[in-house]
Amino acid sequence: MSSKERPTLGGTRIKTRKRNIAAPLDPAAFSDAVVQIYLDNAGDLELIAKSLESADLNFSRYGDTFFEVVFTGGRTQPGTTKPDEGERHPYSIIDCEPTRELILPSVIYIQKILRRKPFLIKNLENVMRRFLQSLELFEENERKKLAIFTALAFSQKLSGLPPETVFQPLLKDNLVAKGLVLSFITDFFKEYLIDNSLDDLISILKRGKVEENLLDFFPSAKRSPEGFSEHFTKEGLVPLVEYNEKKIFEVKLKDMKSALTTQITEEVDISEVIETVKQRVKDAKLPDIEVVRILWDVIMDAVQWSGKNQQQNANAALRQVKTWATLLNTFCTNGKLELELMYKVQMQCYEDAKLMKLFPEIVRSLYEQDVLAEDTILHWFRKGTNPKGRQTFVKALESFVNWLEEAEEEE
Image 1 (cartoon, rainbow, N blue to C red):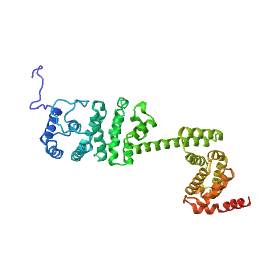
Image 2: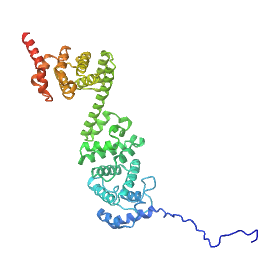
Image 3: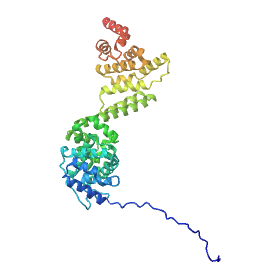
Image 4: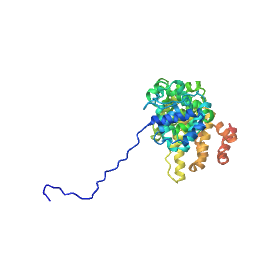
């Protein structure tokens, strides 16, 4: 062998590596095929669903395109809601009248499609999210149709459409500022509440993570509790207004309770605590009866309980009542409020085993500190309406009431 010749391996076949060659993406052809099915069946959704079931179409690849055809009648340009080139049909959700009677069949139709092809759920989410983030590209009438469709989709429990898919995309600053989101969500609320309760709506809002921030749907100029009440009252959604006002009220109560608990636990001067209560009541417009309830709760919440030692617990509770009696006296300004305080004491003693036997001593202490009047105690004893533990507490208080009655007779 010549030194210039290179050795070779005889009979060896060199294999070329095979590549997976993907079929070219062709959403236009898919869209045209689906549109043709709509046209062939003259918009009859029952027949269209059957034809789609038997059609040899690649739904797994062109799921987004399919829902574009369902909503707009044809394919849309990438990243927009504008029509793209290709065939279109006139039976889409956007092309019908904005009424529940005409849009509901499309919701039921989509539900059938998703049951047969559950993998399309993600595609429905994608298209819904894109459309809702682009509300400004739709006409007012078209936005109303989308709102009605969305409400009916939730009302019909459309398979796999999570609330956050709908609500979160709406919270774009430019959409909110233009009032488009408020208009959409108002139409949504009104339509949804036709068939569902307010509790159902609140449940959806919670799952959509917007129940705590309903004001975020409002343009900044209208973003206030007053603006909320005015808008939805005008739209006939009074139950929603009442719910929101109740929620605001509960937040104010919680904030006040938290602030007072801190002050009482830290044993802040009682005059400072009284001023805090007065300011909170003024700012939040809290009714007197709620103030009395809160004061009793925070006073007792700050008691340092000693575990299983009943006598120490009793001493701690009575010491707390005596220490903060002036605070209670400042806001228990009439018989009705004093009676409410007695009911609060009754309920806590009934619910807390540590205080069950302490009811008469607490009442006596409140009497001695001029928080409870004799007439209030006698009224509770004779005509009290709260049944929780009443027989036990009436019997326990009997000797004290007898003493009060004897003193009254002597006078």
